[in-house]
Length: 114
Length: 97
Image: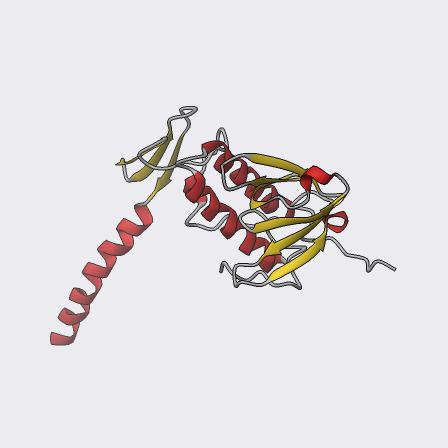
């Protein structure tokens, strides 16, 4: 049952993406339907689609057409051009893990030489 | 993930995006309509026909032929899918006696 719900979320977001250019109202409706399913069965939104709808007005967002995606202050900010809501997703953890990956092999090699 | 819709789980699965034909209806104007499902509410399905017009059809009095993504067709009585789209996942379906 939960598996079907996840499949339905996937289908609805794909349809929203397809329909957006011609029928934006429909894709907003599909986001609403997907949110209803996720709320009813207490599901996490798929990570790929989590930043594709506005947290304020619950509309579907397409970067470049009705949303603005920027990198500033170590965070991805998505601005909804319909209502002006800004949502931020920090990427500090990813930066730190990348730095650690660079440093760790070097220290390990130095240790073996001694 | 898409394309997992089978005749066994179509009552619980997503109808938006499937091709559909209205096989029977108590209102004669609705029988024979064909198109893609674009919206679903508790009591109605909305189709878009080939010319871009939208038709809203009550579920309760119609019988639908759904085209599955893998090519088959399934006949479903509208009477058993009368419920909100998010409620259909959990619904138990009685066999008509």
